[in-house]
Length: 301
Image (cartoon, rainbow, N blue to C red; front, side, top):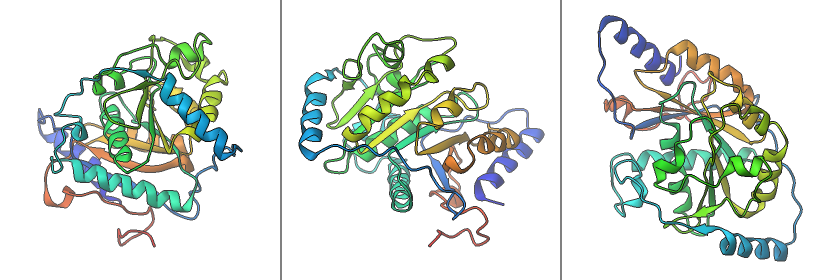
């Protein structure tokens, strides 16, 4: 049984014998990658464009995106602080490395971040993953808040809430009008915009696919923060437009059977699982990167 499965099972047993469990800080995570010959990430859409056209479009992106003042919380937005050794930073650097390793085997530029249930830290992971990816020289990263029911990514970053994705999906604005750029160079955000109680039809309308198709040539990574996977169908719809899915589960909170149900929902499109809010025990002080079916728990070759 994998390390993450063991952690979730252990947490359930502890909850059964204790009336309360202290809240864990959401800055320590474990990544379990799902890597085997059977788990093939769908190839991303082929987009043919000359280098000149791509450069011109990038200039338009920078010129037309809205420059806004973000006020991130330094306690949760690790890489805005200017410090190099804050608790949790190394874990996100490891997560970045694992994604690049996965990218060597399969096309991977559009990544969906979701969780089985609410309040498991998916927006925290999305925001810090975007920050650590953009710290590599010349890399341009776009974060999209696709949780139109209960958006949090903009507040996590201290950014404006709109206009955003909702306005684009309704046909009210184009893609450049809804993109924000903040204080970190080459990090861009599309907030959720206006809340929508039933966004599934908007997501399935085809405009989401159009948006990603247009923006993919402009960014090295597009990270999409989605609604929880078990409660609503939005995450499954959004996953069809992305190259891979990262699922965030919370230690001492996510029931094991719920995590399994969410994992099965994404099948081969699931590229990794992040265990968030873990205790600082030695065995969980780093990421674990193990392939399913690998009895030794070692990195796949």
